[in-house]
Amino acid sequence: MSNSLVLVINSGSSSLKFALIDTVSGEATLSGLGECFGMPEANVSWKIDGEKQEYTLNDSGNHHQQAVDRIVALLEELGIKQDIVAVGHRVVHGGEKFTKTVKIDDSVLEEIEKLSDLAPLHNPAHVIGMRAAIKAFPTLAQYAVFDTAFHQTMPARAYTGAISQKLYTEYGIRRYGFHGTSHYFVSREAAKMINKPVEESSFISVHLGNGASVCAIKNGESVDTSMGFTPLAGLMMGTRCGDLDPSIIEFLLKKGWAQEDVFTELNSKSGLLGVSGLTSDCRGIIEAMENGHEGAALAFEIFTYRVAKYIGSYMVSLDELDSIIFTAGIGENSQPIRSKILENLKIFGYREDEEANAAARFGNSGIITKPNTPVAMVIPTNEEWVIAKESMALLHA
Image (cartoon, rainbow, N blue to C red; front, side, top):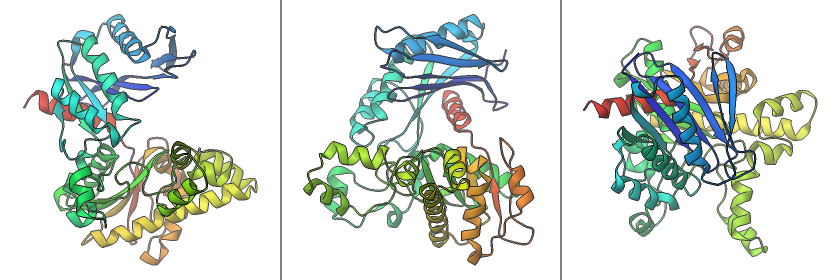
C-alpha cells in the first residue's frame, strides 16, 4: 500500500467532506460526505467501487466527532488506516496571519478561532473538525491549508480598500480572496496544457460554483481576485449577491430590517436564487430559461454578464494573457454558461468552438475557442489534491 496517502478534511458548519488522496497519482481512493449535522437526519455517506453506502449518526450531538469517528472506523474496516501519513484540513480564512500551509498545534487552532469574525460560518467549523481529527488520529501530523494564502501575493493596489488606513490597521479590513487552492491548481494545469512554465504564464481563472470568483494570475501568482474581505463580494453566486452598493444595507436597516435578516438576505436569498425566484442551481436556471421563465432568463443574463465584465477588467492586471480558465461545478460542466460568457467577450476576439465546448464536460479538459483566436479552456479543479500535496510537502520539509 502507498505511503503517500493523506486524509483531506473540509469541515463546515453542518457538514464534513473527506477524501483519501494518493499524492503520487492525485487520485482519491475514497471520498465521502457527512451532512445535516445538528438535525435528526445527520449522516455520513461514501462510495466504494461506485456503490454508495450511508451511516446514520445518532442524536446525542457532536456530529462532527461522530462523523470523524465513523471515517476512522471505515478506514480500519478497509485496512488502510495505518497507511495514512498525514491529515490536511481546508481553512477558508487565514487573514494576514497565515500566508502558507502550517502544521496544526494549539496556538494555530487558537489563531484560526481568532479569525472567526472574518469567516463566522467557516472558521469555527474548521476548528471543530480539526479537534475531532486530532482526537481520532493523535499520532498523525495535521496541517491547515488556507483558501486565502494564494492571494497573499496581491499588490497593495489590489487588496487595499478605498477607506481610511485606520480600518485596515485596526480591523484588518482589506481584500483577502478565496478559492485559492482551486485557482492555484488550475493555473498549474493550464501552464502544462500550453507547454509553458507557470512562472512565465498569465491566466484569468474563473471558478464558477455555488460560490464563484475570478482571479488574475501573473507569472504564477495571484495579482487580483473578485472575492473580498469575505466570500460575499465579487460575482453573482448561487445565493450570494456579490458586489452591491453598501448603502443598501443602511437603507434596509432604516426601513426596520434586523441586521441578521439583512445579511441572511444577501448571503442566502440572493444571487441566482433571488433573481430567478426559483433555485440557486445553475442547471435548474437553464432548464427554466429554456422553458420561457423570465426570472431564470434574467438570472442567466446577469450571471454571465458579470463574469465577462470581471474577466475584461482583470486584463488590466496583466501584461499578457495566455488563457481564460473555466473551472468548478458550473465552469467545468455548463456549456451554455461558458458560451454566453465568451459571446460577451467578443470585443476581445474570443470565438467559441461549439464542438470543443460541448465536449469539455464531466471531467474532460480542453481548449474551447477556435484556432487563431484568444484562448479559453476548461480544467477540472482538484482542491483536495492541493491540500494533500501541501500537507505532504510540509511533512517532509
